[in-house]
Amino acid sequence: RMNSYGILAAYIPAFSKVVGQMQYDLFHVYTVDQHTLFVIRNLRRFSVSKFSEELPLCSEIIQSIPKTELLYLAGLFHDIAKGRGGDHSILGADDAKLFLQRHDLSKDDVELVAWLVEKHLLMSKIAQQKDIDDPEIINQFACDIGNRTKLDYLYLLTVADMRGTNPKLWTSWKSSLLIKLYKQTKKAFIRGLENPFNKKELIHDSKVSARRTLIERENKLSDIEQLWKKMDDTYFIRYNANEISRHTEALLKFDYSADESLVLMHHNIERGCTDIFLHTSIKGHSFSGITATLDRLGLVIFEAIITPSLNDYTLDTYSVLEFDGKPVTDPDRLKEIETVLDEQLRTKKSPVLIKKCGAERKIEHFSRLTQVNIVNDDNNDRTILEVISTDRQGLLSRIAYAMRLCGLNLQAAKISTYGAQAEDFFFVTGDDGKAITDKDKREKIRSTICEYVDSSRI
Image 1 (tube, rainbow, N blue to C red):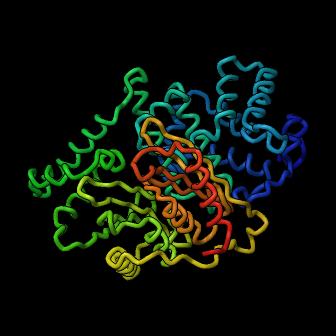
Image 2: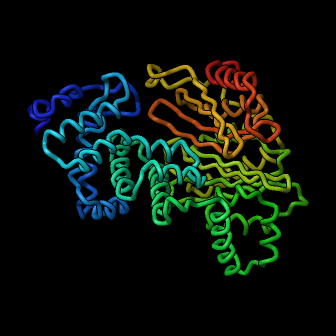
Image 3: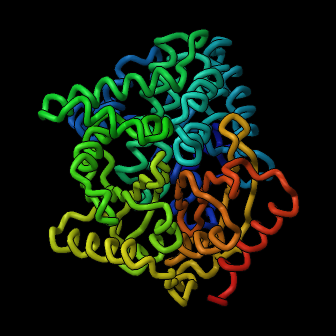
């Protein structure tokens, strides 16, 4: 009512500039002021008992934060500087400081709200764009946050913000990413920032838990250990204990002498998706062939983990949804996917890409030329490709095709869609298994990806 009657705009002059302000993308479906009020509504729902089962972790956390009103104020100011030019997060933090100081809030309260406004996009970016299985990423994020109280506030604001942009874009998958990042960062605080996690500890913990499960299911310890010797340490970092035990049990029955591939379908209830685990010879492995096959099956890929083993076999997981955003649950549909993928891996057919890669009519006005950013991950001796483009059917398989032409080895991929815009991250190495440092090679990668995504030559 305060917004409808103009009282809010009169009370907070900065807010008057976002009243009725449109956001010209397909990520936000509300005006800035509408979105802001929805975010505040979402924050309030966390503390209402009848909604406690909606997002249980948020309902639990909000009971423990010291001052709920500071969370509401952060929600009120998080987008208040949209449309002014410059970084709206930093400008909004300045507006929040001025407002709170005029209302005689304590220095600590002012600093917390301003920090939340400035960092309100940080957690979603880390969860969706970074490798949150990497303990170094978690340790750095924990250091950036500073303490568990700020983590609690930021997590609640992030969930409320993401749910307040477009109801169709909030998924179980995005929720699971944020929960995973929150819980791992919480563990880092409990452990102490001066004593960070390292990869060896994570590998040890995963193996101990998975080994216990496998032995309880009457698998032989000697067989388990022999199989695990064929797996790179990266595998035990990328997968949790439940996934490791499930994969191991299937691989113990796998006949390597038959030159076949393993296709393992799993409905991941926690993440609200379908995981497709593939185990095949590296010689027959083709990221471009697999992505093109999944495209033809009408599936949307939003994460891919490519992990080589030490016996010239690869261990891949593709997390997929149906085109309508739902996981694959129909038994006949699951069998169809399994059969088609098995044929692709067995015959090693060249990828057949979808010819037309144009955007739907409703998003034509939001189309953009593809942008490729290339940086090196020195800690892991690999290169990160960020590909920003207009989302469309067949996009990922075209990127994969271009990467294949450039001779890149894929380690992992994170696929993110923001309305009409896709922001995909690929963790790759060159033919030598190392990061790509040559400037000419980088430029060739950039131009090839842009050419195959933006043109209709395929």
